[in-house]
Amino acid sequence: MAIIEKIDIDSDSIFLKHVPIFSELDDETLEWLTDIGIRKSFKKDSMIMQEKEPGNMFFVIATGSVKISRINNEGREIILAILQQSNFFGEMSILDGFSRSANVIALEDSDLFLIKREEFNNLLYKQPKVCLTLLKELSKRIRDADMKIKILTLKDAVGRIAAVLLQLGDELGKVNNGQIVIDKLPLRHDIANLASTSRETVSRIMQGLCNKGILELHGSKLKILDYEKLKNLVV
Image 1 (cartoon, rainbow, N blue to C red):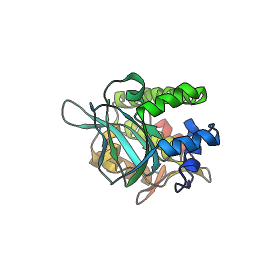
Image 2 (image 1 turned 60 degrees about the horizontal axis):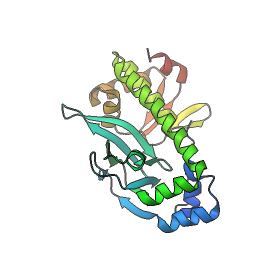
Image 3 (image 1 turned 90 degrees about the vertical axis):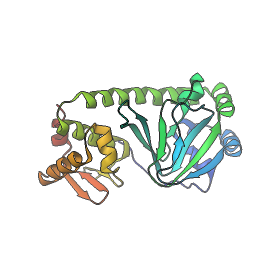
């Protein structure tokens, strides 16, 4: 379960210390990263990274959140992942040298920390611990991709939406009094794209789950009241 804590973003070295792949670096290396990194802000709904463009930057989210998505042959957006503070993206093109494989769009006003490809590769050569942590994260993302495939193969819209909410709870939620709380639930449109259904279907099914006491919804704040019942809907 992701436990989100507020990080002092006024100091890049302190912020980077909270990024999992950099957490074991010594102070000298963190200061080096601070010196060579670039801060950049993006407004809500702005394009941060575009599919098929050259990959020359590694991105770390300092504040805000982003969605990773692609457009299918029918012109529909397929959301692959939602990332927030301390998550990173852009590593695939850095590692294999190919163009970007997806679009990245800001879900809210976001502040990012950028590292040039050459500098990031230098870090990997000099710091094996970063390589190991990066491999662990990439393995996790492969597992998440497998879950995404499973979600899309479910015929029942209720099951797909339940699976997406469980995944969002794992990625964005925190545990509070035995319940999973997501303070900033993605828009219904984005949940629909994750579950391969319509926004109207998402709203209807979520309201039904609230009526059954499985969920509780207040604005953009979602509580999963009964995790097991929600999990049992994924069949």
